[in-house]
View 1 (cartoon, protein in one colour):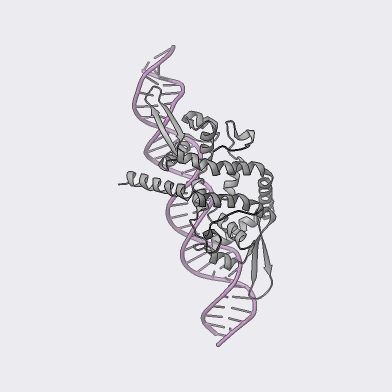
View 2 (cartoon, rainbow over the protein chains, first blue to last red):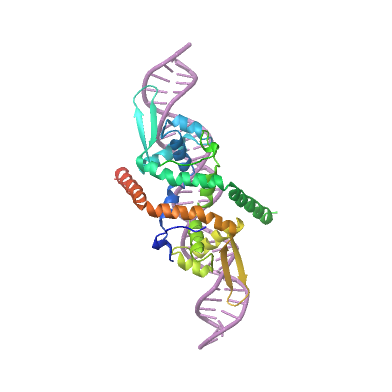
Length: 134
Length: 134
DNA sequence: TGCCCTGGTTACCTGAACGTTCCCATGAGG
DNA sequence: CCTCATGGGAACGTTCAGGTAACCAGGGCA
């Protein structure tokens, strides 16, 4: 596997602590961040909170709102409130948000294609745990 | 931006909590994990602890050892101890580890090419903080 | 008058990640 | 003898992400 052009700063030690991939990974580090963005992407870019929560089993209201607020602050997602009864709210990806869907979907595809490797890692961890904690 | 083949499970809600990308991101979620793997990759696959630590400013001995132990448990990295004085130890990527270098380097390249978007996110956050705090 | 729905907020708790600091063994060199 | 450097470990504390549970507003509806 040979990787194509990589900027010079990433080719020679020392490596900065806040390099691009760490920044990207920090963006994606929230437990639900990526799944929410992925879901918004797949349902066409916009979704109501209820629909979103139903799409992501295990996601609590609090964590959903909190994650969405963070995404709003980064302007990856925007919220629209319709003044009707009962209240209707819609979250949708911004242009900037859509830009970050790209590396995200790369990860989805890589992960799907290399499920075997991911399984192997889990097995290795389980074996190590079993060995250390008899 | 149109994303090519994506497995069916990722196309229709509900979306599983432990889908491939989350597993991948969990692997990469340690603060130093990716930087250590990237460094090992770039220095040719193997490195001594001292060299590694010098290559990553801010990395403490404890966090380095801890991260490397985790990587060993997953068998992404292996350790070789040379019985000489002073002790010489070498860490190197395993085949499995090298497999995971691929998505990692994808993230590095994407991040480098889209630094502007990452900067924008930081600016948006800073603006939101300034608005909410004063 | 209760009780449902909607979306959201608050207080509180717990575990883990991260980091600092001090300590260990070994042998070389002064 | 003390001190250096090697690679590692143990104790400890802080911070924070994540989760639970309760509550709130506003109307519909019986």
